[in-house]
Figure 1 (spheres, rainbow, N blue to C red):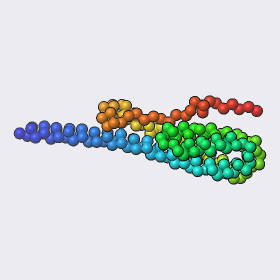
Figure 2 (tube, rainbow, N blue to C red; figure 1 turned 120 degrees about the horizontal axis):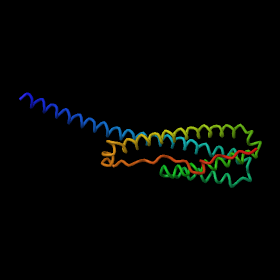
Figure 3 (tube, rainbow, N blue to C red; figure 1 turned 135 degrees about the horizontal axis):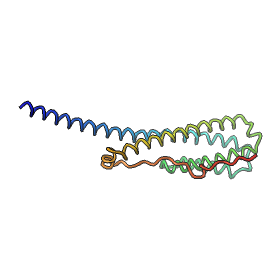
Figure 4 (cartoon, rainbow, N blue to C red; figure 1 turned 180 degrees about the horizontal axis):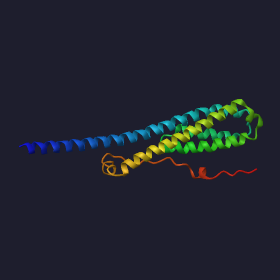
Length: 187
């Protein structure tokens, strides 16, 4: 009779152990997916900060660059696209468009010595530079979070349970091909 009780206790302990392991694994997947959501929210905060800096920059630049209307309109259009984006991919596409427009704006600003010397312009340019660095760091954190999540659901035992939980591989943020080109420096 004692050995039946021992076997029953062992079976219950194994069953409880398996339940605990499944519960822990489920929580790991959920935490990992929540990290991705949090990482995207951090990117979104930085993109919003940058979008909020743009109108101040535009007002500073307008007085100096009256005949550079195309450049100013490109920045304004890119900012509007970013503010109306609904999905992370739309947001990143608009963000890439805004980055290109800002590069053009700063390149054109080189032709205006008074603008380059303006303390307001320099301050806004510095704030945008710091914000760009934060965006880059946030993108890296997002991609790291996606990597952890994807590894969790694509390796054993995650591959067994992830589909049952409705979890699919997440996409990392990619930089556009144009941004991968090495800039040409000429003197």
